[in-house]
Image (cartoon, rainbow, N blue to C red):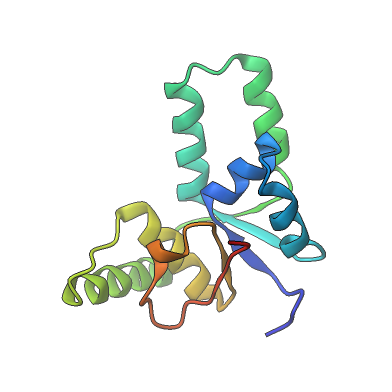
Length: 135
């Protein structure tokens, strides 16, 4: 795997980058020179967050323009199989994983690329998943 190859970016990291959170500079360095992808589930989580927090039109537009730099990864049959495999494996280990996190992990596993997240423990014990974090 290339040191600067493509990655799937988790929702938390996108939030840090957009808000210029103190952790953003660490993730900017980690993502520099890479092709960036994002699960449609992450896009849905962000849209939900904007809706529930009543963001104004201008701020929503800023976020959507920010998201344009990420390639969206849509659902398909192979990703659905990975999602089922991941959820089942975690449940059998007594460590269930949520719908969204399983989907985001499935996108990275299917593409055989790392997942960049600040919540590495959410993705522990997932076979074939490489997690990158600045933590």
